[in-house]
Image (cartoon, rainbow, N blue to C red):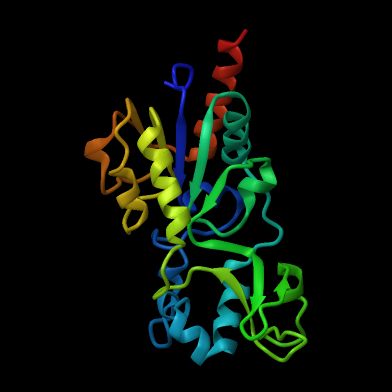
Length: 240
């Protein structure tokens, strides 16, 4: 499918980064399964309202659970970067905020939920790096102007970037091969994006069933890093 493809697109979820040591959200061992239900759930904490009402609690959860500065790209990230450079992968659409695709060398990445590496002051708009946020001597990082710094990530109750979403949809519509990996497609808009694909081959790589398995032309029930490693070996042999 890859060899024959002219316009490929990849849609990935948290499962792409679990092999880098970053937990997902909704699996049996994911972040939300670890929630102490007597207090706030992760889904509540990671919301627009909660951030502005309880910034200290938000940052305790965010820094403690979501930030993994030691994480490195795994085989899935590196092989996807190779597919972009050598095999016509047009766009990587990711639900992750970790920036590992770019670290692995991918240039065309749409981060649906933003990036932990981009931060800004909620008062003056001054930009900050992740390092600035993590180096703060208090849980809540403050700007030089006194405003609260927040990550440029999409929290619950907030909309996605409509312009970037429309651009992603256009790429999907024109693709002849769509690979979906590391996501159960349990929630929109990721699930909805798949419905725009009208190309030749739709491939799902995920340990568990997805909500749209019935639409797939090929389903692989394995860790995506392992699958991509094997794929890389076969592509090398194919090219001689």
